[in-house]
Structure formats: C-alpha cells, structure tokens
Length: 99
Image (cartoon, rainbow, N blue to C red; front, side, top):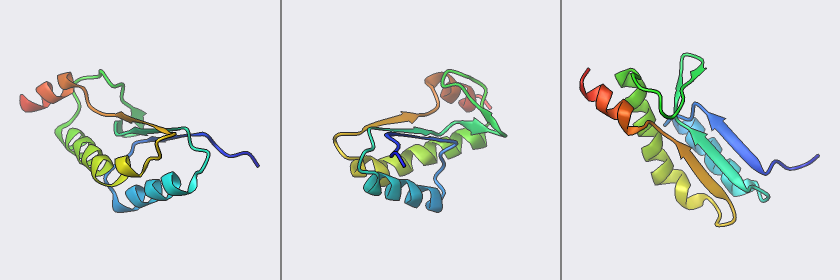
C-alpha cells in the first residue's frame, strides 16, 4: 500500500466532522506534501474559482469554511506540506452584495 502525498477535499465545509477529519489527516499523514481544500461546490457541481453569481448561502458557507481552515487546520499543516485553499473570488463577493 502506497501513501498518498496529495489530498484534495472538494466541497470542504465548516461541518465539525469534516474539520476534525481533516485535522486527523494532517496529523497522521506523514508523507503528505499537498493538501487542497476546495470550499466551492454547489449541488454536485464544482464551481470554478472565478465563477460569479453564487447563491448567498453558498458564499456564506464558503466563508465559514475558510474561517474554520484558518482557525483549526492551517497551523496543523506541517511545514513540508503545502496548503491550498480554493475560495470565492472577489467577483462572487461583489455580486452577493447586490442580492
């Protein structure tokens, strides 16, 4: 069995169980080189980082997910591993304010 060096979580949310699972992965995966947490997923469709027009509730959850990453996961990622967070772009933020 080979160890995965990259972990991608698409549709990462602020759900307590998902945050805890991600923390366990970060702490236990000794060969981890890259962790990608994608906070953008809508009804089974992965949203591109530059896609606009996301629903307000989707944006709010994405921002809660980013806050959870900063609070609970970011500092747990070992220095040898790269953390990439895919979050809403400024265009999506501007459009949500006009809703």
